[in-house]
Image 1: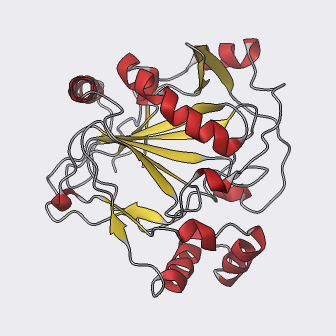
Image 2: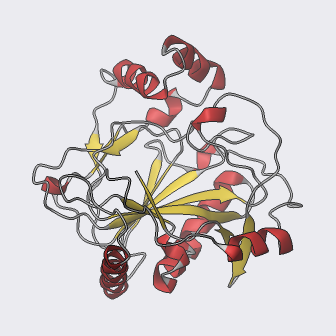
Length: 291
């Protein structure tokens, strides 16, 4: 990647600082979860037709306009193969996308899982399939108590089998719900989470057959944080797979990344919250590229 190009068209987000100072995300009752029985045995729930196809098409057009604007601003948005990187927090710009992220049925389910009202913590927009190796989300969204997180994946177009659909191991969350067991994996991998995921996948491969998410435009796929999943390889690299993953967390919970995995920390959230029609979203940064 050329260092001469910017990763984001934004230099400073005063609104985020103001929201944190005026409505800090503290003072809420602690969650009582995770309540694993909210999820079926497979570890995921699909909400069919949660968004209209017209809204999905409109959001794709908004994204394409934003993509062009970033190009005009000389921002680095493509890899060496011309594929776009994932885009962070586009729901803060797109009102239609934010409204879908505040879907009541999704928040009702995750709220029961958390034992506390949920909020949209962050989001990732994908133009192409992630082709990410199978993993669990627990280390990347490390909370106390553990697993106060849910992935909520929205398909903005029908997912072609050739575009790299989501692959997952049904029921695998039941294998990885014990922090002591995760620590044994982590120690065996010498602290390398990617190696840890490889060990975990190797242990369940004989017991569980992987499956592919059969998702159409407007469907939402919600998974338990311990469900092993990833992005399968794209058979046709040029195919798009417009989709958004919302990351849901409970109100008042500090979310840390893999650098704090299995370590204690003070529960002092570093983001403000915004209420919209009885639902909540975190006031994080404006859209930026993540690599």
